[in-house]
Amino acid sequence: MSAPAAREAAPALAPGTRPVPGYEILGLLTRTRWLDVHDAWSEERDCRCVIKVLRPDRRGEADLGERLLREGRWLREFSHPHLVRGYEAFESPEPLVVLETLTGETLSHLVRRLRHRASAADVALLGVQLCSAVHYLHRRGLLHLDLKPSNVVVDRGYAKVLDLSVARPPGPAPAGVGTVRYLSPEQARGEPLTAAADVWGIGVTLFEVACGEPPFGRDDATGDPAGRRCPQPERTAPPVASRRRLPGDLAAAVEACLRPAARARPSLTDLSAALGSTRPGSRPGG
Image 1 (cartoon, helix red, strand yellow):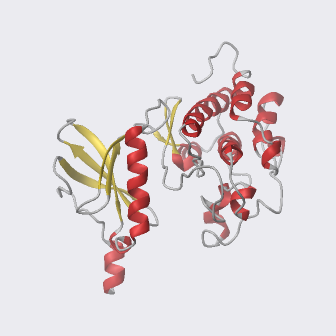
Image 2 (image 1 turned 60 degrees about the vertical axis):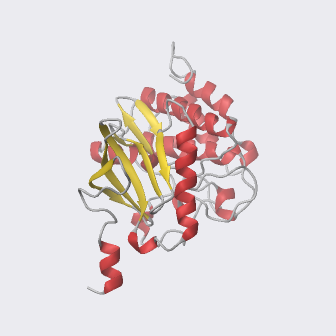
C-alpha cells in the first residue's frame, strides 16, 4: 500500500486517544468523503458523545476545517428538540467538533433494514417534525440544503436533523451544494436559494420514507461519481401513487414539495398544516 493510500485508510484517531482534554476516543463510527466520525466519552458529562474531525488525507484543506468549525459553533448555539445538539468546537490542535450521541437510527438505514414503507401516520408525523426543525433554522437565517434520510435520526418516532456542513444563508450559491440525488432543481442549476430548497428537501425525504426509494434513484445505484449526474432539472418527480397508495391529502402534500418551480412549492407553515391535518388530534411539531 502506498503512503497516500495508507493515510487515507487509517482513521484520524485511534481508540484510547485523547484528542482534547476531557474526551477519549472509543471507536470509529463512520467515514465520509472528508470526515471521520468517532464514538467518544465525555469525562465532564460522564456520557458518550460524537466527535467529528477531518480525515487525515483532508487535513491540509483549510476550507474544510472552517466548514466543520462553523457547523460546530452553530449547533452549540442552537437549541431545538428536532435538531442535534452541539457541545463544543475546538480549533486546535486540529478542527474538532463534539456533538450529542443520538439513540435510534438514520432514516436511510431504517428504510433499507426494514424493507417496507412507513405508515401514512408516521410519514405525516415525520414531516411535521422536519418542518419544525427547518423553520427554526430559517428563523436563525440558515438554509439546511442537505435534507435527506441519512441526515435524520429517528428513535421511536422522534426525529432529529443532523449535519449543517453545507448550510448557508439564503441567496446566491454555487451549483451542486448538497447531495446529488436530493438537490432541488435550483440547487443543481446554481440559482439563488430560498426556503423553498429546504421544502424540496423535506419532500424528497418523505417520498423516500413513504415509497421505499428516492424519486430520482440512488447515487450508489447509478455508477456515477457524486456530482456528475443530476436529473432533477430535466424531469419531474413521479407521483406518489406510482409507487405506493397513500391518503390523497398526504400524497398531495409530499408532491407539492417536489414541484420543479421553487415559487410553486408550499411555505413551511402551509406544509406543516397540511401534514398535520392528516393526523387527527395531533399538535403541530409533535
